[in-house]
Amino acid sequence: MKVVVICGGVGAARLLRGFVGMVPAGDLTAIANVGDDMVLHGLSISPDLDTIVYTLADAVSAERGWGLEGETWQAMEMIAAYGAVSGQPLDWFSLGDRDLGTHLFRTGALAAGATLDAVTAQIVERWSLPLTLLPVSNDPIRTMVTVAEGPDAGDEISFQEYFVGRQHSVAVSAVRFAGADAAAAGPGVLDAIDEADVIVIAPSNPAVSIDPVLAVTGIRERLTARRTNVVAVSPIIGGKALKGPADRLLVELGRESSATAVAEWYADVVGTLVIDTVDAAQVDAIEALGVRSIVTETIMSSPEITRALAETILDAGQP
Ligand code: GDP
Ligand code: CA
Image (cartoon, rainbow, N blue to C red; front, side):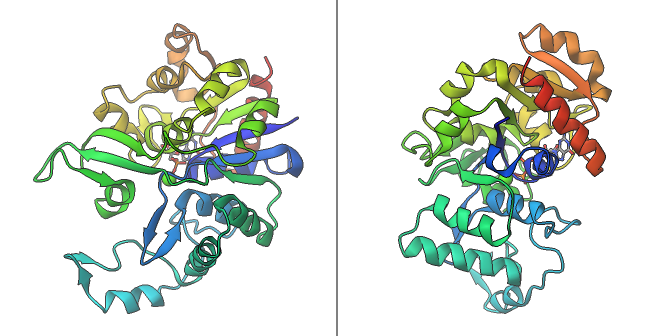
C-alpha cells in the first residue's frame, strides 16, 4: 500500500514514526513544508525537514522536539559575543554545533547547484531512513504573518521572527505564503499523491504548516480529487494544541479552536478526520460538514499508541 504523508514538523515527525516499519520504505513518502525555511548567517535552514530527519533517526532532542540530542552550543556562544545586528542579538535563533553541520552541508550543496530535493535525499540516505522525504517544492516559499497588535501592528514578519523571535506570543491577523503561487511542486511530489492509496495530513499546524503545502500549485486540486482517500489527524485536542500556537492561530484567523474547526478548515480536501477520544462529542458536528469522523487516542505518547493511530489512519483511508 502506497502512503503519502503531508507534513509540518514535530506533529508530523511523531506520526511518521508510526508508519515507518509498517509501510515498506519504497511505499512511504513524506511531503514536507518549506514555508519555515530561511537564510540565517548565510545558511540555508529547513526546520521542518530537519525535525523529520532527526526524529526518525532517533537523534532528536526529546526535551525540545527539534534539534539534536546531546547538542553543544559553542558556535552560538561565539557568535553571541560579536553582539547584535540592527538591534537584534546574533543568537536569537539557536543552532547547535552538530546541527550546524547539516546547515553547512545543505548550504554548500545548494550553492554548488544541487536542488533541495537532491540535498534532502542525501541527508535521508546518510541517516539510513526508510522513506522518501520530499520538500514540497524546490522553489522558495516563505510563510509571512501580519502582526495584529502592538507598535508594529499591520507589519508583516517572517514565520521564524514570529515563532522563535517573538515566541509566537503576538496576535496575528493574516498569514501569507510568499512565493507559493510561482512555486512548482518538487520532482515526484504530484506523482506520489496520484499514486498513493492513502494520503495523510499529519497533526501539524493547519494554518502555518499544512496550508503552505496545499498552496503550491496543483496540490490542493490533487487532494480534492482524491478526497475519499485523504485522512487528517486533528492537532487540536480538547480545544488546545499540544504545543505551539495552532489553537490561538485558529481563533485569531476567525475560527474556533476545536476539532470541528479543523474539519471545517480541511473540508474541501479531507474525507476523514481522526479526532481524539476527549472530542468524541464533536462527531455529529464534523459529519454535518461532510467529513467522516473517527474517534481514537491521538496523543502519541508511546510507540504502541502511535502505531495504533497509524493503523487506524490506513484503514480509514480506504473506506
Ligand atoms: P512544527 O512545524 O514543528 O511547529 O510542528 P507541526 O506544525 O508539525 O505540529 C504542531 C502541532 O502538532 C501542534 O498543533 C500539536 O498540537 C500537534 N501535535 C504534536 N504532537 C501531537 C500528537 O501526539 N498528537 C496530535 N494529535 N497532535 C500532535
Ligand atoms: Ca514548522
